[in-house]
Image (cartoon, rainbow, N blue to C red; front, side, top):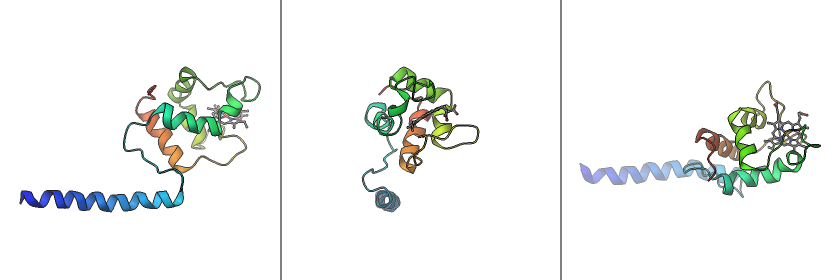
Length: 121
Ligand code: HEC
């Protein structure tokens, strides 16, 4: 009986990895790995750099809303406006302003980072 457990586990892992392979096809350059702790430095900052900091690091261009340091980015995560705006939820200004919505993978990474307590990692 025990001998069966590992083959079954490996089979299940194999099946679930097929599912993630499809996400790789949809978003070729970014494998969406949210299985581990999402790193602010390695995953979140690059998203913000390419889509947000251009407007939100100087007072004039981002409606007075500042990002670009851990303290500022975390405050936005904690008060709910970060996810509300990037997910285009009702009641929030959709972000990034004037550009297309972030990819599903980027949204998943941001959500996971917030759910983890938006750590400075
Ligand atoms: C082209 C400039 C621009 C870009 C790029 C941009 N923003 Fe904004 N953002 C603004 C402006 C201007 C406002 C003020 C509200 C408005 O005009 O919609 C704003 C408002 C916000 C708000 C407040 C929304 C609310 O409803 O309270 C948040 C949060 C925000 N931005 C986050 C982001 C994030 C996160 C990104 C990147 C994914 C981003 N912004 C990209 C210009 C930008």
